[in-house]
Image (tube, rainbow, N blue to C red; front, side, top):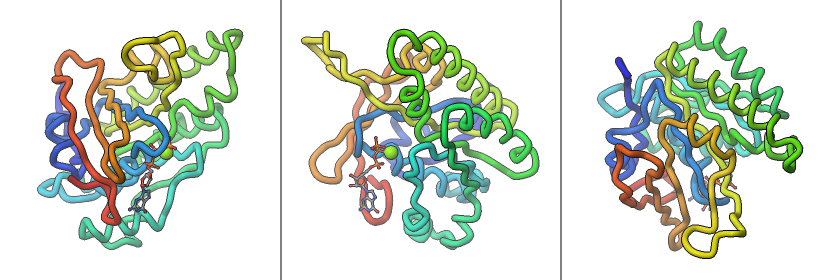
Length: 238
Ligand code: GTP
Ligand code: MG
């Protein structure tokens, strides 16, 4: 893909894993169990994108679509301060939208083109991509419709990422695989639609205390290497 830019995660080990940070014109999926750090990374990236290029950012704003009401302005300001930004200004540079259901979520993304055309948006966050879809379309009988809508939604996100040279970061839940006796009993939600739609897939899991472990999976271009980072008062750090 031509003309791609990168946003540093603010964590050297993670940047190395990702080949320099998260990419524009791509969808990066963060998947992991509760408390694995998905939302914290989304907060951090919304700050990192604002930094000048020599500090790993794009000197751009973020669009933050929050589906679970877990966006924390105080946390944003805390991370901004640590990264040398004015906390109030950094918060203003995050355009926030709360999505109340899956149709609303899709509408926000559709309508976001108008905002992105006017504002310098370098990052679009969807936290969580799948939660509304999963709760509104439960069971096998709704699976086809759910996957069709999710597919449309992801295609739309990728188109926007491509047109506006922005990075898209989405979070995804893990679900149990009760039939798996060996190997990982957990798998990402969203099935093939997300597996094919996400450009990069990052699996996060909890280590001891504030330590978290990340690896890239499903990628022919990345080694299945694990790196660790920590979640502290300063945000997400090495
Ligand atoms: P779900 O959305 O529940 O699936 O989890 P998640 O993967 O989004 O987890 P999240 O990013 O919310 O990570 C939560 C972890 O970050 C918690 O276990 C806390 O330890 C840590 N954390 C969150 N906020 C703060 C904070 O303000 N200070 C510190 N030091 N740690 C925090
Ligand atoms: Mg979360």
